[in-house]
Length: 145
Image (cartoon, rainbow, N blue to C red; front, side):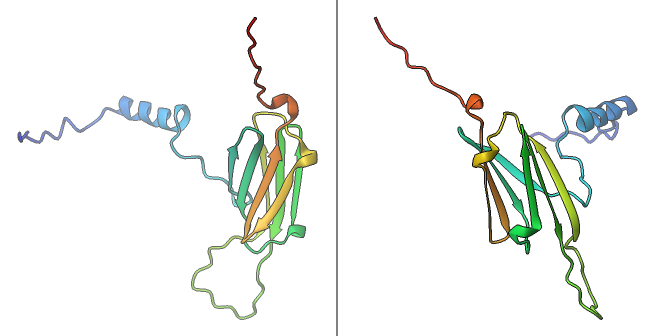
């Protein structure tokens, strides 16, 4: 094990290096998604060969509280989380959000909205959207002569 003497000037960076790092981390390679407003819905989207599967936490919502529309390659999920009205409530913490939300996603391929399915189970919305037939990968068998 070797010991190196601490040099405070070695750890200082120039203003230009700091600005370059800030620009790169913010615009070129952002490591964290920008903060969204309170009126959006956090989603996870994964892709299989035939479908896109969108999941979102929607605790306490009933199917009639949600509106889902699909046009082309765009999915829109909207609704409203209603506030529990309690008179004389003395909250210590109040972190759950209430009010209307709207989330629009543009997926990389055309979708087939006629066969889409939505299911709410244990407060999680699972939306399964099949890809359009033209967007699915097709394998071609090679023949020999």
